Length: 347
Image 1: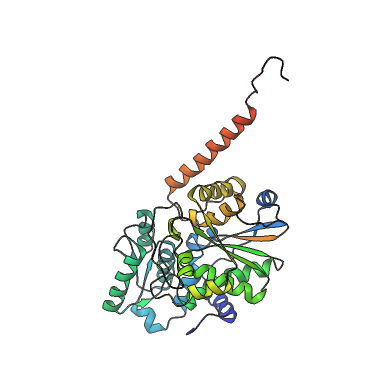
Image 2: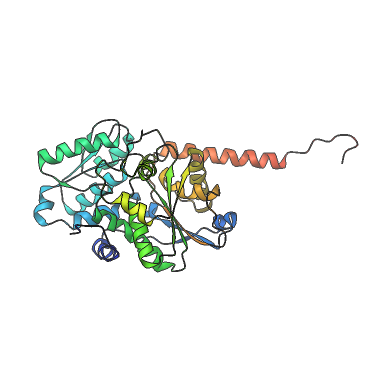
């Protein structure tokens, strides 16, 4: 068990522990994005191809596998905006462990349905992740269940850190890492591991412009609640927890730069990945690509790693975004091909 801040050793321990439950995702060459940005190279780390469709299985597996037999028999409980709940439900089902997942009413119905289909008990409560977390605490105490929190746990953070271990092992010359940011478990883990291996790696967190909970908390020096506004990157919604002990200080210590992206920039990122790689990614995964496409960071002559964190998105919403991108491409093409007006006497 980890009782204090996670370390690089904890990340390597996690890698060995979770090996049987996860996929080692490859690095994909994003040559088109490299040309657009002037980067020496850009690679995608497609956790959208991970078991359960997101990186969250790494932290969930590390936590649940670290439990004792009596704890596993008791059952686990969590709160989530969707992907973590799905990961907990999957791991618990695989190991034959009872699981309860607390969601707010703001979480999309399709996410709740997928969690329930994996055998977990789904409990809806409140309008925000903070509300769901409050109810989670009540249920945990009343039923004596074992907590598997989404991000603010050193064992969860160590699980997410295994992504950075894989990236650096496959591409030691990596210079910049772009990582989505919400509660901070992913970014904290990846930044901690990357910096421990190579302090020169420039780690960048990408947040939603609409609800940047971690950024507001960093400014205030304490956890700050933000309003959860509707976003295509819905799994990045939610606060960092009112009693945050780990991700806030780790993000503050190890992350070099923070960027904000808009809804349109996220959609551009989703369409770009579809168009160039035929990969389905959710809005939360596209914040990194959107930031690069819109040149929010100078990566010229750099080797850049871009995390595609997940693929959980409603089919209709996804198809609508892709159709919108195709329509936009057609308009651009039409504008380029339209004949120029001829004015007499002017070439």
